Length: 163
Length: 307
Image (cartoon, rainbow over all chains, first blue to last red; front, side):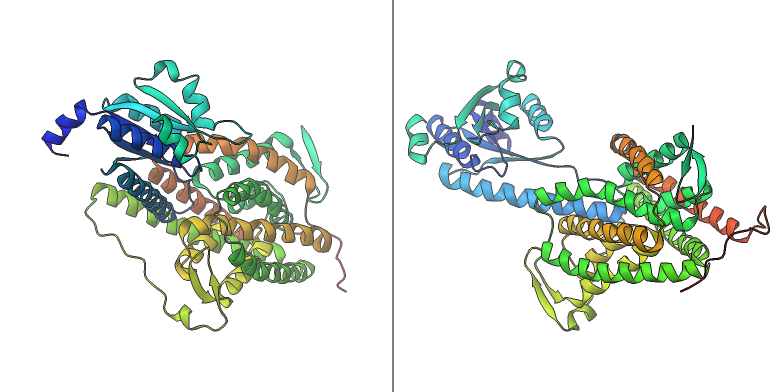
């Protein structure tokens, strides 16, 4: 990123969305893109890849990590394309390794440009999802940015109406 | 503290057996090994007859692999089609292995066969691990060193009976996974190992499967072959000691999470070098036991007549 664009983003609002395989991700993406477009901000995506389990051969462990990384990058690129087509600007991409919640909290603490974290709540019977349950309760007070939770069941039109 | 092992026909203290299971569990958690090939020599050293050690070991393999298999299933990392073909080979291989085990037991050569098998297995794994950790260490000091590319096997593409494996994105001969499963099945029966050490690299380099898919699919094969081995060893050869198996499994369940936590904190290539040395030390001890003059030169036993 060049100096001028860095200066721009400092004043721009950044909406962070955590990438996963849930169906409600699409709702979070749409909401974040619409909001970012309205306020002239950007969307950032975070994908957290799991640390591969220890393998008996180090070479196999390396292959496994490489492959996991490629998959995570491909997923990030795929969601990034969706953001680019909705927002008209490419998103900021973050790829981390480790625990999803730990890495998210770490990124929020490190990156001062992020102003809103957008999470979508799951609609299943098992609750809104582990990230929403923990970030919105135990960790909410310690966050440095605003937190928006979008219900995962909203249709595109409903999301558009509130963003 | 003594507990009598009904099949092994010896008395050992139960904390010792728990500890052995625990050590294998810690190593399994640290290195992702099944722990089987480490546990068998340890059991032999404390006096468990090799035939019983090996057969009981298959139980431990099931216990350590099932939870891993379930996780991999949930993540969709099991190629069931490939797994079933390998398993078919594995069931034939392990049944043949058990049959061979029975013959060797009847002619009194099973203990020697197991000892020699383990000497070969431990020596080759130990040497390869040592080479690998030295290489990793060198690369860490000199990151510019060229990394070897994976080579492609073209011969394997010429075999007949080609099948499509959608999940692994492969179009290869079914004879390959079938044969691989068979070989591992025989080893599983005679040496009591799950065979992850051999099967995982073989599936990656010979079959050409994606690594993520290999981890889950190999567990699929390992679990069901180990079940077949345990069942047949218990019914045909009467060599599974359930008291021993139970103690080892409990120890393993305690040890594995500890190993996982240790592994997350320490640099792995140094640990690996240590494990390699440990494996080589066990191989040396086994060789020594093969050639050393026994403390009792004659042993009395009831001869079992063949059929």
